[in-house]
Length: 80
Length: 473
Image 1 (cartoon, rainbow over the protein chains, first blue to last red):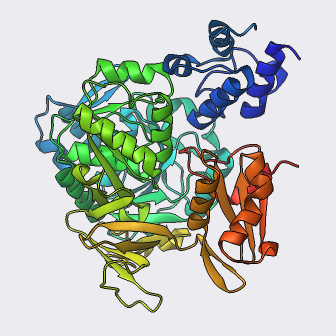
Image 2: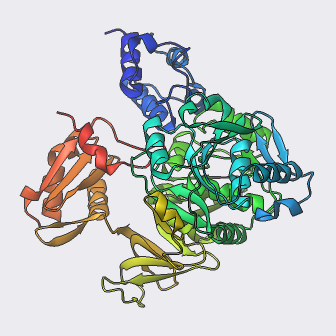
Image 3: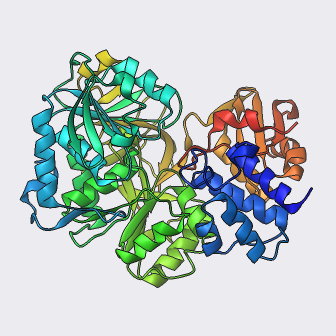
């Protein structure tokens, strides 16, 4: 499994979305019905576990759409 | 007018949105009058709320005009809305315009439009409302239960006034919304600050998102409220390490904060010149019943504090006798002018009068200490019997958390079948045996499970009934 596949699996597990929905038009915080603060923090914790990284405050608060999660992981040194 | 809104300086800002919309007390009282003119007094209305000024305007306009609005989340599941609609058949809806399409089947006529919200008639005949009824709130956000809490204007006014007094709210305050306004605690923050003539900063964005904090610092928020889960997230966001220069106070209610976190926040608050209030309330008491004065936060950890001004507590045994001695545990009873009229389960119940007469059985088991400070020991329903012995599930969770530190562990189940759910493999394997031995009970009545997720509602509250759905095979 590639890191991108791992990332996508976590997003799908927590938000219950389909492969087709994995994009910035659909997966936006608060607009996508299931992406609320509870799910947000659970996803952050799952990403931290899976990729052995630590999200800083600004990483958590700026993770507001699908692609930004990938960008933050890259910034934290994950090859994705 | 409600909260004396028409007697404030009309130029002062009452509501300020993150979209830049500003509503002064003068405009607010005009809007409240406009809604009053459009709806006949004594009508039942559903108000679909967001944290935007128009939601507050609609709610106040309806209450002011002796209508009974039921406040609901604008994001409410359509099936749940349909259930409530057919159960109570409101004559009016106050809804965001962008949702009017999905509510089309319920709308007969649009009556009034106001900055993105509209008032619609449903064509339903008028309900027979009791004269004292002013507001309806749901007790649970997401479940299918149509049960509502019936509140009077006296309930709303007395609780707002009591909150203003013990929090010492002045017109200089600028609370920022962190909780939805259809939730009793979120609403109480809006009510008490409008009564004080303050300015409420309204945002729909969450504190886990950057726009919230941009709005917070741009508009110099002075306070916020939160349930335990809010504070757990804020802790994860390292808020209690830094400084929020404009912040003067913060409040916590909606359940018990883990004591270690309470201590951490209290120490941070003291060092930052912030007043931190732990509080206790229920929808059935309009919102608030008790508060822990900030100076007691460190020496009375775990306490819900003392009754709010105008209220008092009793602790009663199973037979209803009042227990006078400190340390005795029993059900907590609250007596005060903010105790709701009662519940409603159907449209006919809206005609009912005051069932409670100012006295509320909270369903919480509590004790008080020698200084008159109260402590919640557990929820009455959070007890079950193992072969005839009464066991507190909260107590069980405490034992398990001490044995498996840092693990999230929850207890549920029914009589003779105590079920432990956790996010730790080791605790899932050993927890049942450990707990049975600790309680000197037969192991056969205990089982433990590893769960893939912790079921929570939108406020982060644990949904105990849903645990079995997340048990890993």
